[in-house]
Amino acid sequence: MEYIHSKGIFLLMRDTLKLIDRRVMDHGSRVAYYLYKMLECKGGYEKFELADFVFLASLHDIGAYKTENPKEMIRYECKETMAHVAYGYLVFKHLSPLSELATIILHHHTDYSQLEAMNYEYKDIAAALSLAEKVDIFSLALGDKFDVKMFQKQAGTVISAEALELFEETVQKYDVLRKVKSGAYKEELDDIIGYMIFTNEDKKKFMEMLTYCQGFRREAAVVGSVVCMCISEVIGEKAGLSVLEKEQLYYGALLHDIGMLAVPNLITGAPRSLTSEEYEKVKMHVHLAERVLKNRMADEVVEIVAAHHERCDGSGYPRGLKEVQMNRSQQIVQFADAVNALMGSKAYRPAFKDEEILELIRKETAAGKYNKAISKIFFDCYNEIMEYVRVRAEETMSTYKKLNQQYSQVSEKLRER
Ligand SMILES: [Fe+2]
Ligand SMILES: [Fe+2]
Ligand SMILES: [Fe+2]
Image (cartoon, rainbow, N blue to C red):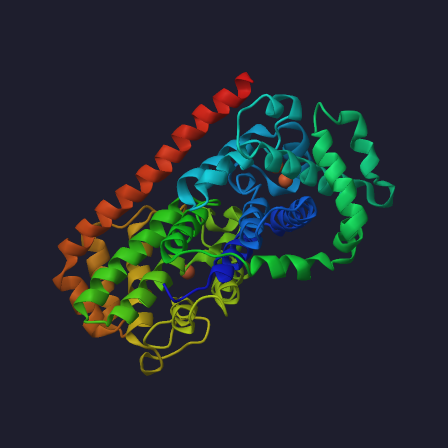
C-alpha cells in the first residue's frame, strides 16, 4: 500500500478524530509526549518501540469519542472513567494492529495498588501512562499552582511510586513541563512519530479502524462508507479501471465522508430541512476531509474525496466542476455516494425503495448529473451490486455489534472491581 506512509496513518487518524473534538486529541498528544520522555529517560527502548507507545498514548482516550461528551473531560477522566476505558480498549483490541498493547488502555485509570498485583507485561507502561495523564489534567487545571509533588501522597496506592520518581527525573532532565507549556514539545513528538513503522497489512487495518471511527458520531456513517465503497468497487471493476485506479477508488470511497465527523448530530439528525446556514456547515465537510487527507494520502485519492459532491452537469459543490473536468474514479464515487444516500434513511425521510432509487437515478442521469456509462453499468448489474452491498454491510455491522456486546461485558467486569 504505497498511498500512505506510516507517519501519515497516525496523523490521518489523529486529525480525523480532532474533527469531532480536538481537546481529546490535544490531551492525548501531551500525554504521549510525557510518556515518551519518561521511557526515554528510563532507557532501554528502541525508537520504533517508543513510537508505538506514542501512537497508543496519543489515542488512549479514543473511547471517550463514543461514550462521552468530550466537553466533560474532568468527569470522565477523574470520576466516571469506566466507559471510555472499556470502549477504547475494545477499539484497539479488535480494530488496530497494535492489539497486543490494548490492555495498556484498559488500565490507564487502574489504581496502582490493583495494577501492582497483576501479572501483566505492560503494567509499568500502564502506570507511567496513568501518571502522565494525571499530570496533564492537573497541570492544565491548576496552571502555575501545579506541582508534581502533589502526587506524593498517592504514591504506592493510586499511582506508582516508581513512575512518579521517573517523572520527576524526566522533568529534571528534559524540562518537559515547560516544553508542554510553551508548545515546544510538538517538534520532539513529531520526530518520534517519524519512527512509526507499519507493514502494508497494518496500514490496511488502520484504514479499517478509521472507517469504524466514522461511526463515533453516527453508526450509520460506517455502513454508508462501506456501501459507497462496494458500489464503487463493482462499477470500477466493470468499467475496466487499472489495478492502481481500483485501489485509489477503494480508499477514496471508504474515506469520502470523514469530514462529516465535524458536523454536529443536531444538524445531521435534524428531522426537517436544513437552514441555509446549516447546509453551509454540512458542505464544509468536503474541505475538512481534503485538509486532513492532503499530503497524507496520494493526490488521486484526495481528489476523489474532494469531488464526491460534484455532479457532471456542474450543479454539485464545492467547485461546480463539469464532466470533462473529472476523471472516471471521481465520477464513480459521486454516483455511488448518491445511490448510498438514497438507500439510507434520514431523520427527515425513510429510505427509498429499490424501484424509487432506480427511477430517481434514471431521471438524474437523463438530466446529465451522472456519467451515462457509469449509470448504465449500475442498471445492468443492479442485482449483483446490491447483493455484494448487502453481504459487506452485514459483515460490517456484525463487527460493530460484537464490539458493542463486548463493551457491555467489559463494563460489567470493571464495575465488579
Ligand atoms: Fe482516560
Ligand atoms: Fe486521558
Ligand atoms: Fe459527503
